Length: 261
Image (cartoon, rainbow, N blue to C red):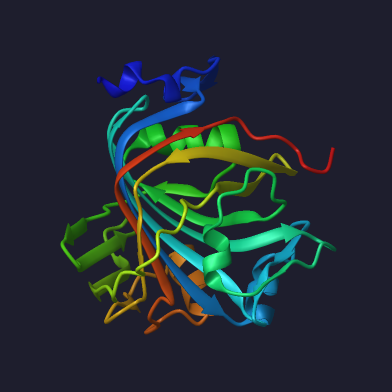
């Protein structure tokens, strides 16, 4: 079946204007690969990154969670592009949510108040940057994003707009978790024109979950904001605690709403 004719994508559509042309909402991602790495980080360091927004970190056994996601979007309603996201697992300030383990994040729910607050979101095309910045307020920039995945081996890099290396995550993943875990429900938080937006991302994928294995995150020599965020969170030299990957990732990115009313 042509994915564009799949009932999953048969939802009401609207159109939003951007400086790079009109964008159909929700954005449809018909064929993609997704590589998501979860890191445990110091709660105070994560809270400092949320100081200016009405959010607080979700804690897992006393630690906050940083999420580094790599996407290869082979076919979308925006055209093909690559994307890398740095985010913190967060909830509305005052909700104080605590999870028992990282695998709790992988439970498929559609009404949770927690989601990923996006700190940085480099993309490979100007059209993807314009849509993300102008519709959702995502902190996007255009850079080179080479992503290589071969079996258990992975190497993903992010270069800043000047061509300097921000990060490299590379190595071999750990053993795949034997039980079948459900897909992660994706919810993002972002600030747009001074307003908090909560955005629902409907996903469909066959996922493999594993430990971090020999993977390590290393920072380059770029002075970019994303490099500073990674350093401030203490992620240089760290190994992810949990990975979730998919080679048949599909999703719908809807318009955001204000969760504060």
